[in-house]
Image 1 (cartoon, rainbow over the protein chains, first blue to last red):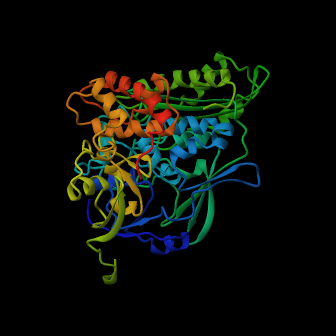
Image 2: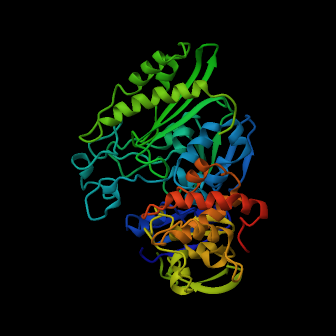
Image 3: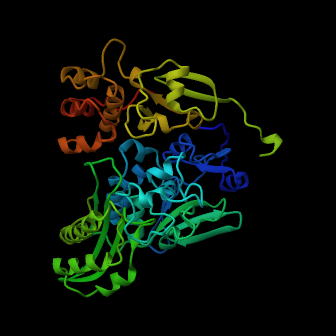
Length: 330
Length: 172
């Protein structure tokens, strides 16, 4: 870790005033400090935002919830309103990291996690995400954990978050504040595919700060399931994860939401596909068709073709589990 | 950065550690783990991976378990920290320490302080009671010797006792 200056402002305006090209906001620090120890991130100033008043979970006028950016991951997963009305989100959060890290990590910070691609983390090798234009060793190297959807010639990294996969399925919005004022970003537009600019993980402008994450009024409190498949039973990043949410009308699908983690540079969702299966029978035959459609564009790399089959089977299982689930306990 | 924005080598920090107040000067880039071990000689908390992947550095920060290796000391100003050194009541070991000895819940012992601090927090969180819940709740602490069976048995035995006697929480 290189030396840096440290400031702790007490309001958002003060934090934004301190922000500059060589500064970085810090909250939980679970990812940023790790990146600083590896010299992947080298800020000259850390702006500690843990003193900002962004710790509330409040009801919104539209019947949803606004989650302050500093609400901890563990606290959020155990919040009574989240457990009761957004169990998919609670399940996804508890599937990620460890109890210690969930105590430390903030809601806003979870969205800003960087990829765990080993080449990105190793500052001795090229990486287009870390040093644009230097190349992507993962494309021809060890790519078992990498993307099967939406990758580019320049980057095959995947987004590591579990929480974000549920937020994508639930159509959250991200509230941000920056030098140019406040705005909100639809969750689908927050993270981006690598394309020509793999160094950009998301669509935040320079020095913008996430202030809250807003959930719409609950629509999927019953038939939901977050399925995470990983190399060990706990405390590992997803090989594949599936956030499945159903609203059933009798024995048919009234509404479907489906998002995948571990497959792409962002949580992978296809709203047109979801709409197409509305009204179809809620059966494993339908779920198999959904899985096939969801993965029809998959382009596996040398070592991760198994992920296509794994994702296919995980989608079918997650939808089946969501269908059978009753009640609101996470 | 401008000239007036030079990096100060040390900044003041006030902490309560195992019930004792400390007024310190720390560099902003010093982790809580390095402060405990190198500056305060509290070497019970261990540096395993230094990347939040093993849990050997687990301490309690205001009663919550955290990885001290991924916590900047300067960000803990005003907080209460409890380490393995703060769990025993003078000569009387904490119920979890006794249970770890009784169940031989270690081999090399390097992960043990983190395991015990983690289990103290698990008890105060009040969620884990079954064996499966304990396993999941302790999954942030790795044991390279593979003493997991005995670790889970020790926690399983001590947990109800701690919840009943309210000994889950740390000493402030």
